[in-house]
Image (cartoon, rainbow, N blue to C red; front, side, top):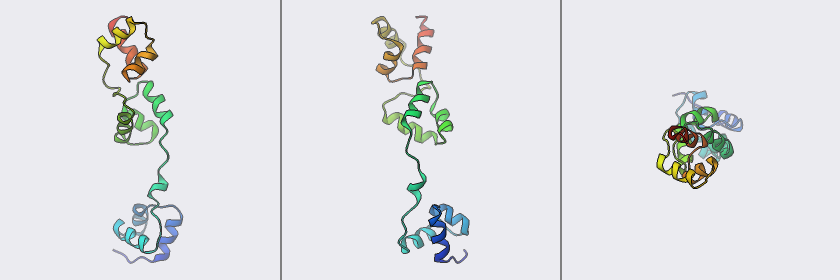
Length: 136
């Protein structure tokens, strides 16, 4: 491991690099950078790197019927991050169709496709696919 100076760490930290990125740039371990950064009284840049989750964009893609993996690719996030948000919002996976009897029952009670989707917490696309499957 090469010896690094405080100035190098401070300079890279000012540019917004995370401990991992600084370690990579300097050819040292992340734990070494973390230790030195803390000793220098510098805050962790990790949280500065993350953008606020765009829930509107997520819901738009979800309602178009995209899977977690597809949404993750479009939003430049990981599939587990999308899965976490979807579950937290109480939404079912776009990989599984809602129970056909539930869709038919709600439709026969006069619910719109939008209302069925909201009631069953699934995308509009999945409701439409279910209705086509049922020939309703």
